[in-house]
Image (cartoon, rainbow, N blue to C red; front, side, top):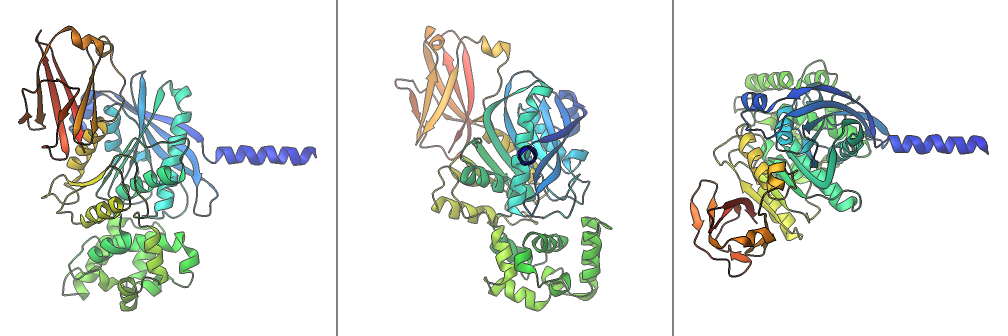
Amino acid sequence: MKKIYCCLLVCFAFQLSSQSLIDYSFLGNYTKAQINSSFGYDAKYDVALYKVQYYTDNLDGESHLASGLFCLPINSNVMPLLCYQHGTVNGRWDVPSELAGGFSLGVVFASEGYATVLPDYIGLGDSPGIHPYIHAESEAWAGLDLFRAARELQEPLSFELNDQIFITGYSQGGHASMALQRMIERDLPEGFTVTAGGHCSGPYSVSEKMIEFTLGEESYVYVSYLAWVALSIQASFPDLLAEYGLEDIFIADIVPYVEQFRDEEINLADLNTLMLQWLLLNNPGGFQARELLHDSIVDVIFNDQNHPISQAFQRNDLLDWSPQQPTRLFYCMNDDQVTFQNAIYADSILNAQGALDLAAMDVAPSQNHSGCVSPAVLATIDFFGTYADFPTSTEESNSACKLNLHQQEQQLHLTLDQNCHQHKLINVTIYDTQGKVLIHNKSLNDDYIDISSLDMNIYFVSLTYSNGQKMNKKFWKH
């Protein structure tokens, strides 16, 4: 009996460890000046960086080592928790925990005041095995369990989190961040509550919009993505694809290149070069990615939704839920890697299914995929900033007057604390991010302003009092 009891204790401890912190190590600090000079961002806080090792699930549902980056604003106040999911990387070590793979965006978010986690994903960084690229479930596991690990870091690193959670990501990370928000909202009603999600340039419609974009008649030069997707669905859905090897999907000349990438002998950029060189020599019509696949595979992908490969793609779509928290899909119409139709299509489907506050927004129509990063991230920062409860400085906490904003339908409600009524309010002005005045000289006879004339966007409200005091606050018209 004693042996059974001890065995149960060991099993219970192992289950607990499968979703918790393993270890962490300090990587260095970024000062506000360094963030400004290195990343071109006007930081509010210095940031400390830590590599984190933690447990998450692997594709078999077993406890699995994973790694990621934790970016901590250097202040002792309570702060929100944010997950940034990174985009497609070149290989195993091109990841945030190695200060690569888009880690700078985590530093930027942290410099705004968010305790920021950046998972490497399973199969990347310290996580053994193959990376299941664009696999929605494992992307979500990796982010959720790093959230848990971050909570465990509060005591050893002497910081405190509030109950707010923000989720964002770019490119593959946009897919991963939406998968994480879906998991928390749909499958985990207790313990975690999403405050807002901002997903950027992600392939939310893998089985439709991305297939049309990458395998159509137009040239598509990021052909190595197809290889990683093929390797991913083989690993992720062995029940569906047991009868399909790489030689059944790719033409014979391409298979050795894909195998080299699978075995980590070459990186993704090398693979892309080899595949494009083959197309250049063998396909005078251009860089049609479909020429790398057997015609029979292209045919079933487009015409047989019940085929195992089509079913695998469908399992990674993110259109089977309805977000209940404020959500934005930021995109650029000229995106050359992930078609903007993903965001437009997801907007229509998710809203039709009952999303409460979701919209797709084109943040820079002329920008391609690389050029869209900065405007998308800045739009996300502005969007999250309207909901985030940031720590207040001593100066702010001693302020004589505080203003809170809340939108209800087409009305912007203003709540002023008692100190605000010591002087007469003489003017209310609303202006856009370019400084253009849109509403002005409005008195507050009631506690709200009609904002029905404003489009969905970011705005500022400015209040002026008889003693000359002014108050300014940003809000998001949704």
